[in-house]
Length: 58
Image 1 (cartoon, helix red, strand yellow):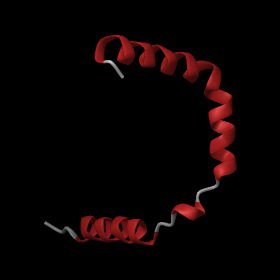
Image 2 (cartoon, helix red, strand yellow):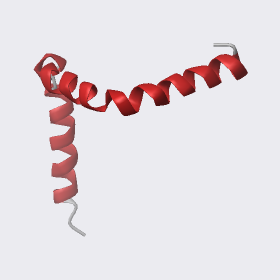
Image 3 (cartoon, helix red, strand yellow):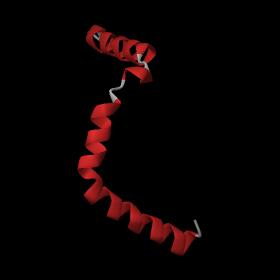
Image 4 (cartoon, one colour):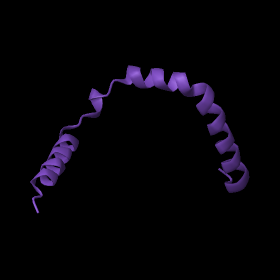
């Protein structure tokens, strides 16, 4: 059984993780994405916050 392809995939993945820099993330895209989904996301988090406060005391 030839596992060279799997080995190459693992090496490539770990190389990408090693060379990844958080500063390279384009935050403008993330901000626009959050703004787009805020009308859906915010009420869900509000309900989760109420549940956590009511039942767990957070």
